[in-house]
Length: 111
Length: 115
Image 1: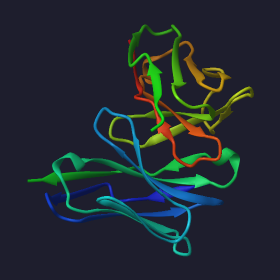
Image 2: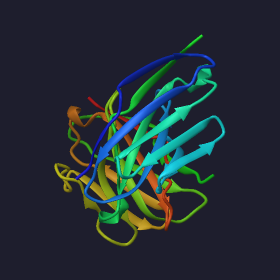
Image 3: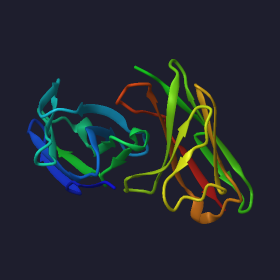
């Protein structure tokens, strides 16, 4: 099976940089995804890493180290609207490629 | 980007009744759809994986006779909560994935309240 660990809460100020870590244990790794979810809304896709290294998409970047079973989401130039929950998710290489989600990190951005 | 719709967005039903939730991929064909359940401030718990034209694969602990899933076409999957009880009250979210893709496109979710 899969299990993921990420911090439950992170607080930062506008304009700052925040890194949300995710460590995972999996029986068959295919890729690591990150999703953002605002209160009451649906998760939206942010990024996906299948290979080691950094993927950059605007203010958000995601990193993966397969050998360390570790990844992180980096949010730069934080804005108030970035306050949300962020989930890492591991995609299984077997079993229809389903994804297991972490418990989520609640990011609060303060002025 | 791909759009997934869910209907209804909110439903209140009485204990013992059944509720059907529809999940549609509006502009793409989804060979695989997923159904999740989410409690407040908690993670998304995968309930089942739905593949078009075949039986759904349920996660351990999810009663397949209580949560009926039908994936009749490449754009529609339905989840029916049968004989609902107050403990079934939750936020149910579906997602769809393109064949060969890695990104999941989530529907807006359905808030079910069983009284």
